[in-house]
Image (cartoon, rainbow, N blue to C red; front, side, top):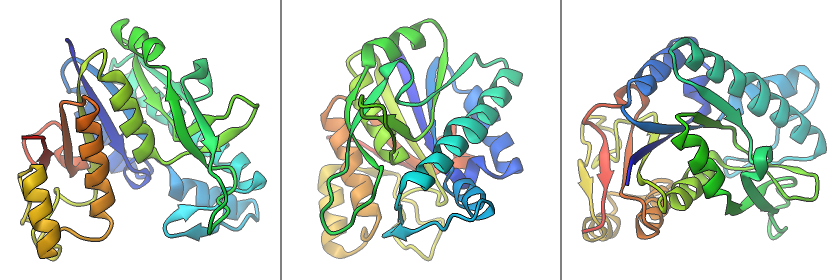
Length: 257
């Protein structure tokens, strides 16, 4: 099967001019088929404030009421997504900006209310991998905004990590998929206070050992759990690295066996 590289990049990277330019130059140099998933939370918070809409966060997740949904749809699918697409076209990358509603690519269920009512937030139910694979085979580079839909006419704010993971799983039936999570650190660290203490490779056995020893803790645990879930579903490798290291040999590779 052909190789496909899926890159997930957080809003902080795509919202600042220098880091966006560097990221897209590095992304454009990745050989073969590729797909980009982006965030944009800080821009949404800024625009919401300008419109007099207060942003509410619980455990780092945005509460998406009806007015906030309008803002994130405008910002994620419009401003951030189309800026990235235009910049990629300037680099001779034939990009196509999409939300989950476009071409019925990603359907979600509205998250049920338990301890917190997150509002119009989606949990991914299905990815239209055949259609997405067809676009990719035509040398189109999809750029996915963190929005899905419920097939009832509603857009849903959806976590970009989740979209990239679920898309990677679905496309693993069509390609040899490498999933790259770009974030602010150089990789998974042995010592969170030492940016150079990157763990180069993590297997299930090493992961279990480091969790037991307290080396891996906090928010990195669900990120790595998602990585292993993706690998079990057929994704070939997951890399966690700094955005500035995209396309290089650094970062942490998560593998099975």
